[in-house]
Amino acid sequence: MTTITTPPRTHGGWTRRAAPLAAGWLGLWGLLALLGTLTGAGYPFGANDPHGGGASLLRLVPVEVGPPVFAVLLLGAAVAALAMSGAVATAPPRALRALLLGYGWTVAFLLAVVVPDFRVLAVLGYLPVLIVGAPFGWPDVDYADIFTWSLFARFAAVVGGVLLAGAVLAWQRRTAAGCPACGRGDTGRDDARVAALVRRGRWATYVAAVIPALYAVTRLAWAVGVPLGIDKAFLDEMRETGQVWAGAGLGAFALVGAVLTLGLVQRWGERFPRWMVGLAGRRVPVPLAVVPAGVVAVVVTAAGFGLLSTPDFWDFADGVDLATAPVLLWPLWGVALAVATYAYHLRRRGGCRRCGRH
Image 1 (cartoon, rainbow, N blue to C red):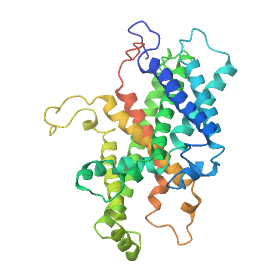
Image 2 (spheres, rainbow, N blue to C red; image 1 turned 90 degrees about the vertical axis):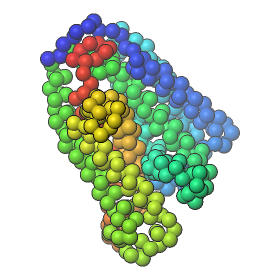
Image 3 (cartoon, rainbow, N blue to C red; image 1 turned 180 degrees about the horizontal axis):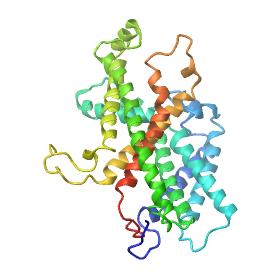
Image 4 (cartoon, rainbow, N blue to C red; image 1 turned 90 degrees about the horizontal axis):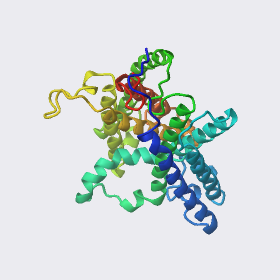
């Protein structure tokens, strides 16, 4: 049963900082969007995107409309986050609570999932190669063409969306008489809910591991010259242009992610294995697993959403090949990884340091 071992306290830690941080971050970007509205410069999406923005729904927003829309949404979200930052002594009116929660979750989703596209995931996948190869001039790319203002704005949107989601979640829990840090209430229903989520989490973990493994198999096969699911001529063309190595980089990133995902249900995901000298047998810190997995879940979902929203992606006139088939499962990958990560967190979180509940 849910018990309280220490007197409950008001919100603190991340629950206290999330709303002010979200308000500051969103307010800053809202002011930049307002400045772009007044000057007509700086909007990095749609037709102003140097990469075309073809894999994002923002391609449908005219460049003259985008800045004022962003300014209103971001500044409104900053105000909402500030309204959620204070301690709540009594529950707000139901209509006001529903309005703030609906607006907050909607803007958080737009920022974290709709604004970013495949490039955020691609850069994270290529980043190790770019960092290691930079001193040696490999790969032969212009880094200024990769790390653009448009890409930075997409990463900023993800940060803002995550911060806002944290603020909204804490406020939602607090106004529902739950602990803002862990979400536990005073009834035994929490135990049954957690047990059900943990059971689903095991299956979600396997799904979240299989999908990137399937993607990795195709890209790594191409890297070694096996035209798995594609024409030999197309593979030769990719090898000549170097695109096959870019795919291999993402494939390796996906394969490592698949293995690490299994750690969410394996013993070595809770205690470091024997071969890790200096750490063997020690407990794996929960944030060490939850934070990276959560970030990947967000950017994978955003990448899948962006690609699947592109009409050209659905041009199957020549049939579905293994170059595109694994990508169809990316939204499922993101959701499954999010569920698996949350189940891992619930299983290992222990007693809450805020409210003392177990």
